[in-house]
Length: 416
Image 1: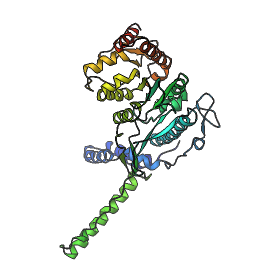
Image 2: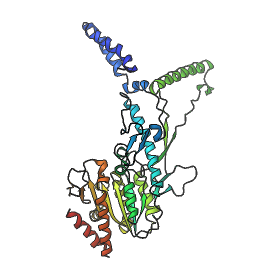
Image 3: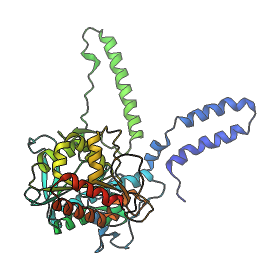
Image 4: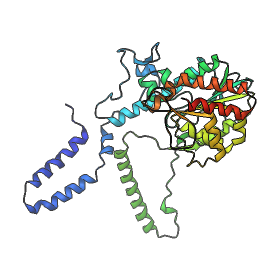
């Protein structure tokens, strides 16, 4: 059994404490002092000294993983699923390895969107200069010109990016359940244009510049002897700080700073920006949204800020375990009424798919997604969402009056 360096460091302290506790009452003061010493040791930081280098491959092949014909991530040699605990007792290192793989997965999904789904990568802001931070979205060739239908996909919060519902599902389950690709392909087969939002790409990270320390010798008013003494103290302080930093951060992880993307600094801002510059400009008579988790909150915020435009252009909205809250977001009465008529939220539940689920909030109907796992709600409700959109589209075609169309939606979902 391997013994970590941190255990070897702490072992003498533990032994000393045990020996002291066997002594008389005079040893209580020493025990207290040792306990105080232990309380000052940051074990998480100490464990970093035992870590292998945080140097991971930058390709799936480097990790020795690949997606098989079923879209499952498997080890190239063993055929086994991904193993998180690659090194025992090194949770932080394993987590960093998982995150490194996750970044590769993100790029892999981007490639699938372009090569497998034939989507175009569009840079935003549309008027960005060469030097400013940028993000991007994905669109089908006919997204802005399709005169009939447009589908807009919005994922939730966290590490996921455009084209993903849940990184965990992509790595541990398969591409179908974890990505938006099945939605994109079926939408295009059924004649929709498609826009894929990227609401978590809010900033770029750059290395934080080091601030030069100005020498106190610049103070010409001070006597030379005093300046020399202060310089010496400053150098000693820096030496101790550098020594501590070497202990605290042995992996030399870079300090990063965030440069936010103009008008796309949050999921809510991003949704409004893409609406103003793309969705509102599209030729589609009917626009449909699929929004998961925090994506639902972003849609409601869009609805609040662009209420009249959304009402005139959007036919139906499918939410999957949305975390929106019409009270906290201060959605007005007319917004809530529109949502009741035009939205449906497939929520995590152990009930069968499409079973009605009661809600305390006066917003849209809630039905079961057929799973109690939050991250699976989009995939499990996939067939029902397309059926919901088809019925909403047919209802709009059959009645020129928006009020009758909205009522027909409500009746359908009250009957579920």
